[in-house]
Length: 290
Image 1 (cartoon, rainbow, N blue to C red):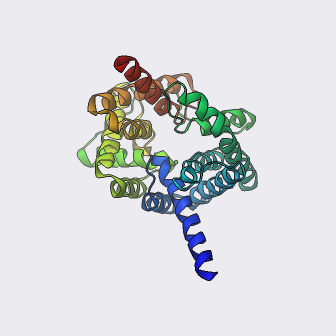
Image 2 (image 1 turned 30 degrees about the horizontal axis):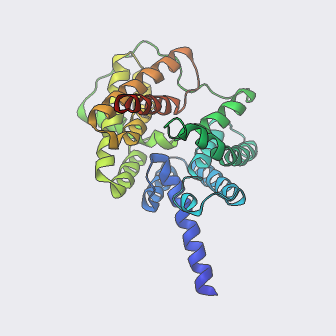
């Protein structure tokens, strides 16, 4: 009895960690542990937010009777984790953020099945779209919510050396989970590399490339330093890693254009540029191969 309970607890922990690892598209418990360590270094509140959302989404998935294999792979928990991160990032009051995080994470879990079915019929993957849809529903109701991706401003004077560019690129990897800073980004990179060294290289390339493109488009250097310019490119590169370098590079550029457009309009794009760019690549590849 004790051994069975211990195994059940261990399996639940691995599922939770894989849910976090899926934020960077890796069904790997060690990746999830590295991402959590990055949050603890940057802001422990983010770790609480993500774990609250992941638990709520996974419990909802169990109650909905979703397949156990998908649950164990973290496919039902990661949108809940992202929903929790969004709630705690936009809402200052902890009690309100917790309530919104649980409700939003539950919403992503219940939305997942019909939404995924609709997307698969069109050859598309869902990625973080359930979190985006749910977050966009409640975000306008929060009067003091900051606007993500502020409009582009004229670039300030800034000298970029190799060290500075690497720091901003790593910060972009950290922003995949709403964190920032070199230590958090380095932990994310280590976590991805543990699951797939090739994916780690693609993520780093995507973050660097899209950051450089944003800077050429006139994005402020402060946004680059915070990692806000690189995370959509990193996620797009990860999503398209198995499509080949040409598709990956094209998708990353498309995500940069989408994020720049959202920033110019002052829209809270979050990870929508990554999702839209990847959908575009998937759709175009289907048309070219059919």
